[in-house]
Length: 117
Length: 112
Image (cartoon, rainbow over all chains, first blue to last red; front, side, top):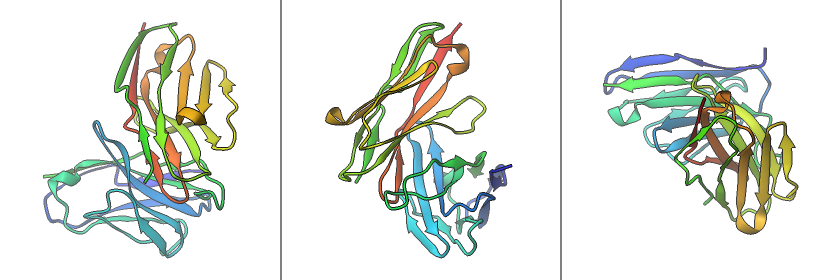
């Protein structure tokens, strides 16, 4: 089944304890991205990756890191989580993005609910 | 910078009523794509439609229809004869060269 898999789905952690949210897709998609969803703010893009070893900041990158060493994986790293990073996180992928390759439909993971105390 | 505005935060309608969800966007790109996604209470995000900036034809899919007007930078979504299963948060999104920008979402409640 074609899908985007995120783990963990739920996590409660404490301020400053490094954590990684994994994201993996099995569709050979080039484009991957991370979003956070907060009440009243909708979905905001954190980072995106056009392809392996190519990543760039979205609208709210502060406090996050990403890497894209393999096409299928795009982990989100919180080096020193703070309470304002408590949110619902979504990973998504698509065949390609932007006018050059034709904007494609995003397939989303199920979401990861993170609470930072 | 690109921007998507969904001014309607929450809408309540009685079942079988028609409802229109508004979406207004801003972009400097001449070529772009517009989307609608649905997020039911279960939380997943489901793709509904994609529209190219150079294709202003309206589209109908069952009870759903979309009205794209480049002149007013709007991409509105109408649900005809709403049903309880339509209750969800609906997001409008804009894709430029690399970034994808979402609106803040409209929560639709269909009352039986």
